[in-house]
Image (tube, rainbow, N blue to C red; front, side):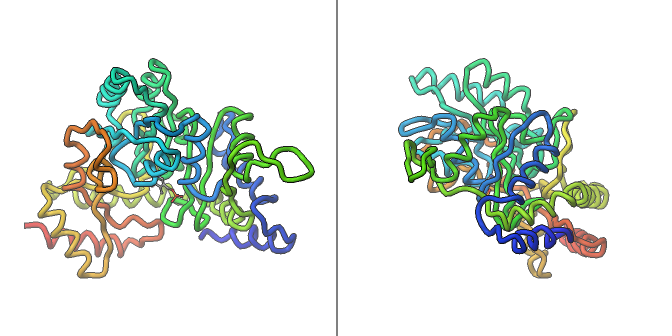
Length: 362
Ligand SMILES: *Cc1c(COP(=O)(O)O)cnc(C)c1O
């Protein structure tokens, strides 16, 4: 926490606004709208997963539809597709961003269109805060008329050609889960350029109550709004977002400067025009054995590190799904490691981690 959060939470208590609406929700939305800019409208929700679910619903995804999803991601990018009775089609990554490959994306679109199953939407992900190639993805989105859900859960504070992540797709989403760059303990947001779409999102997120003195419903709704208490935490967190981004980027720089010389690691550089919040510092090791040796050596010292996300097309739960894979994300999963990346790591924490890694190398 940054310090100002308790002031906003106290306000919620003092004014007795302990509800999923109230001044903190409106204030947090205004803060996010000001931060992202370019006329984006923000609806704060109970989680990033809820935001993806609602985004797909708003785009008309339904039973029997196919939705393309980046394979190299956390399962919450893909799960909501199935909530709507639709089926995910997984697309592998490109090596220079680790995100959805525009070439494989086009191959997937053409294949599915050829099979008479034009995808209803594309879920693209800025993994670990690194922006995907939005120009290429949006060009395909426009060429084939398929909207993009921009999963920016890990990328608040990142930019692509100067534009904030969250504002690049047809609908954007953020997560404020406890592990993200800023947190409300649990929470999320949906972003759209269209005020009517935001209104519809809020309507669906509050049980789809029609305008009437009694309870009347003409749509199936959800209970997905963010609590006014948690939004108070979000308002305080917005005051330290830039500090958090700076701290995460400093972690990355420290690891790069201290570990590059060993020749044992590949770092994910920012492509031209990309600015990553470096949510997590993820490195590639030479092989699975080295990856595990480092992970276990750190674990023995009570330091947590983790393999990269296991691709969705390799997950047992999605084994029946169609995928367009060329081995890129499978290789990242085999060799990649997320290093300790908290915003509050001290210099000596980082030095200790790097020293253990040094001692593990042959
Ligand atoms: C965290 C995360 C989500 C889900 O957000 P929650 O707020 O935890 O529901 C979705 N996609 C990605 C890539 C994430 O990392």
